[in-house]
Image 1 (cartoon, rainbow, N blue to C red):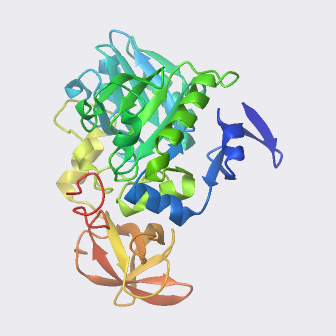
Image 2 (cartoon, rainbow, N blue to C red):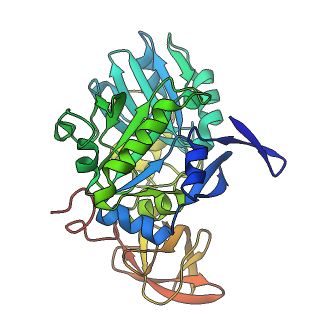
Amino acid sequence: METDIGCEMMKTLHLASIHRSLGAQFIEFAGWEMPLSYSSLAEEHLAVRQAVGLFDVSHMGEFRVSGREALNFLQSVTTNDVSKLEVLGSQYSAVTNERGGTKDDILIYRLAEDDFIVVCNASNVEKIGSWFAEKNRYNAKIENITMTTTLFALQGPKAISTLQRLTDFDLTQIKRFKAAWVDVAGIKALVSRTGYTGEDGVELFLFDEPISDPRRAEKLWKAILEAGRDYGIKPCGLGARDTLRLEAGLCLYGNELTEEISPLEARIDFAVKLDKGDFIGREALLEQKKTGLKKIRIGLRMLEPGIPRQGYEILKDGEKIGWVSSGTFSPLLKVGIAMGYAPPEIKTGEIVSIKIHGRERGAMVVGWPFYNPDQYGFKRK
């Protein structure tokens, strides 16, 4: 569904009316009217870190790629090795241009031997759809199923316990980056042990869900919120989604990843398999690896008061060496944190500065996640 707001047509979520009833504040994001927050960003952020939060992320793009040459097609347009993907497995990957720059970062799900779902960023649905159509020299069927798919993300240390109350299926059987078809509250959903917060949790797909009749999605959303009531579950918006992913050191397209930044520079090289055979951008990435990178993604933790923001300069000994790609005030750590790009010579532990409102503020180069992984995130002990 589309709505006329500010003289531009914006897409609305299947559950827009429910989000309004929960007091959501909306913003425009990638052509969608999206909940920014329901209570406060900090409350929602901490609910996910300490208990459980529920996100409606149905704005994400989905493509179904099927047919006897679906695998060959995906191998040719993505950086990871899709042939290693088991049925009901998922894989983080990237789509690169001929120069090795990133067109998008994606998740690929294998539903059957010749049946895949590609999840891309909302801002790149048209671009990726056009790119796939242009590069499809194989007998692959490509369908944009974005508008008939709802996607919820249930995240936090109490996420699995919350969902377990709604199904007889043993959710502990689903390992990270694996999925299963699960009857949840009487509704068949694809449940994947993935997310964008650094925490344990799942993402739930409902396919063939028309926006004109979202009854299954409404029932599932309400059932999950009720199941998590004892844990203090909160509906969460884009604000907390962004601060959570930044604390976890996860890339955001348009910030850490662009057509001018390669997966190697972004340090997501674990999703690049240069030995799998040819794919678009492979030669450029091989050349980068041979000659060396000119910039890499780094983490930054403020040593002085100030909130680093996208575009702010990173300096060393008074000279500009890079820029901030994403920055925020961490609700968990109570300090400014950021990611950015700088020469690879800049090492963890070095002190740099960030120019904030005309003044240089000290920061330390750090790794990610920014939090202690023994205390927070899916690796917590």
